[in-house]
Length: 120
Image (cartoon, rainbow, N blue to C red; front, side, top):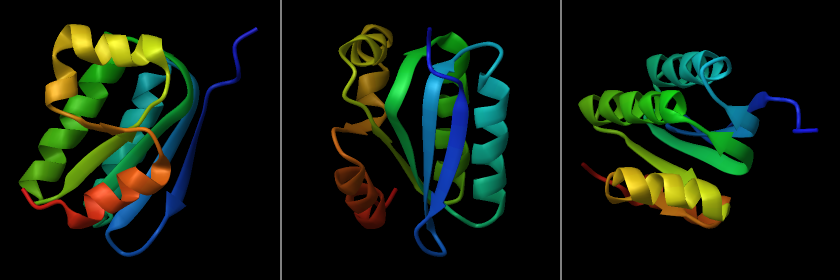
């Protein structure tokens, strides 16, 4: 049985924020992720890490949410990094070419450092 879907947040400072997702991000769960990301950005956090370490699946709806977040963050001079170690999810990013758009790293620490130093 797949793990229960959950989104948890870990504020780091005034700008940096980690959003961790557990379970599947699909048509039914993506709106919750979208809301959390939008609220974080509206709250002034413009350096966001999306941790997919415990994510088991994502579909095109999830990719759309992530693309929307990147666009919003760039508008606010921000940055987004993704933490992922799952080969199937990595393949989804590669097939769609989104691995060229997103900063995808293996650990949360690397991702937090990447958004801290990012300037767009």
